Image (cartoon, rainbow, N blue to C red):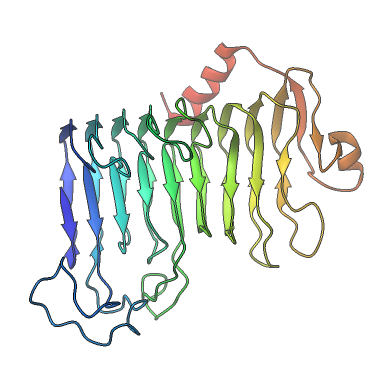
Length: 314
């Protein structure tokens, strides 16, 4: 299914997708960056290339809903494929779906166009079966776009995206369950059960304003690995439960004017101890850092499943 150009409130519901050559569902908008566009044959394109970042003309999908669907065995021919992908699209709702068996990321946000999307209550596993990197969810944000989605006025800053109450399993080529890549910003990832992966939270290449909170991470290598930010745009990581296979909280800004905000997490390791910013957690906390966080030995699987059931309302 392709939702292309000017679309409002398109809904793809209660559908099954299997053995698809490319994406199961794609939502794709347009801006005027070139003199012609094969996706819009015969249409007069104005103000190129200067209008390439301008999405205020509304020629893009908004309020698309994908719900109650299943998708498997996608990307049989095109390997850069997902169960759902959006580009130059805003305010999508992807909820209550089951996605598995794909070659690349399960749900893919190609850019930071507009924002205001909600990804919730999905079960996604067995992604990236034919590629490295990514996991159940991936985002990029290599090009800012001008839209009115955030507050009604033209802005290059997108509205917050929310990823919540999902059950993601990063069991193939595990990197992260939620991979915020290449400058991704304005994400609130919370109340998810996230299983496996090299780390729980990621931000790189200028990414910022990425908030992970109230998640349960089961058997991840470490808590987080993020890049540096500017003051006022720090990443935040708090109120999470982490069952960690390594012995380090992760890599993040430990000092400076834009320190990563880390606090009130529960860490669990084989040894019952953990390092943070090149010192033990107790020593780090003596400096007034990572307040409220604790560390203990690994819990039983039954206890972890109990956390997940409570978190997701099972």
